[in-house]
Image 1 (cartoon, rainbow, N blue to C red):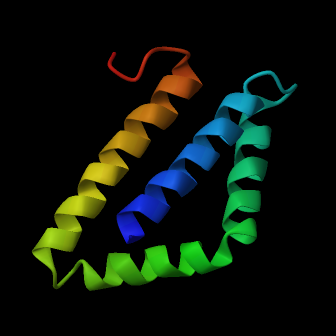
Image 2: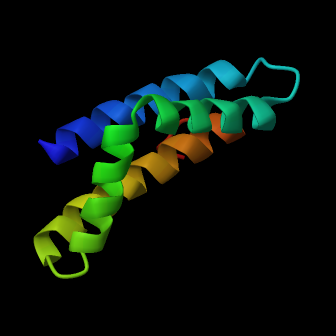
Length: 87
């Protein structure tokens, strides 16, 4: 359930990032969107921090989080660079 919730949150963040590309200052708009997302989804933000702490002692959780972070990193970089995530 946590992985699904984090994936959905990641998709929301992705939409915010994509929406910031046309802003006069895309990086400021990006950070504004990220901060708003954390604020709007405080419970999920706190659960994410809790999962990160627990992952220190749970290899399976650590693997799930690592996969999610890798996808998120690639997606964010792709949006910022204007390329496909596979590149």
